[in-house]
Length: 235
Image (cartoon, rainbow, N blue to C red):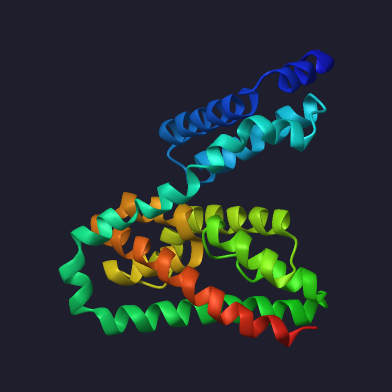
């Protein structure tokens, strides 16, 4: 059985993308049925995909050869998040100072936390810069990690984990600290957990989704700038 699965993935051009989509659908159905944050569709799809690859003893390269087509949609999907922002343009202009201050604070907090924890844990330069872009979208984070000399594949994994955790725990954190302002909640989701957090922000409300969409783009740009400076703090 294991050998048959392996042969199927090697010979099928779309085996990887099919597995990814079916796993995501399974996650979506679980989330719809149980309505619990832990059943995040992306998290479930990752677990199922890894389980299939391990069970079938399938190399990642073989799987990715058929799943790479999904990656082509990553950048245009991120760009499409500008639509809800456009719909809330007037609200953004009225609160532009608070928005800018919030985004700068969010980015600095994120990378400073990585810096402090890296010092405590004694991480090397390569390991440190791998974690710096953890809170920005994969499309930008991969480039930042590669440019700074990090491990790109680990960066992708860290970005996904950060996004999933933000999606699952973000609303609870806002309730604990009594953050009720829609703009603040949206900026928090977007700057801390990029597109995956934005998906949750859109579920909460239109303003939250729009501000989170803005946070993805601006946080990505700010992280590129600050990460370049911070990367020299650990040699």
